[in-house]
Amino acid sequence: MKIEILDTGSAMCKTLLGNTLEALRESGKNGRVVIIKDIRKMVKYGVIVAPALVINGVVMFSGRMGSPEEIIALLQRNLSSFVG
Image (tube, rainbow, N blue to C red):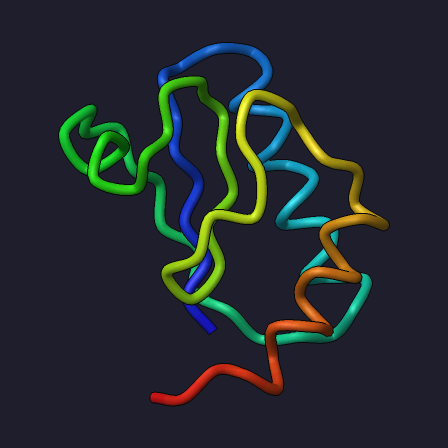
């Protein structure tokens, strides 16, 4: 599972990263977390407000942090749809 954190360097971005890592640990799921700081890539995703969470190429949310519990639910929902 590929997980991207679209990050502008704010405290909210750091919190989203921490919550995502915690969600991976708690859920026992495997995923590769990539931090994206390239504004052009964010725009390609249609994200204008960071932080944003992208799982398997799909923006789950942007402009907020997301709790570990919410991210766990997203990980579980998207695990079955990941191909490759």
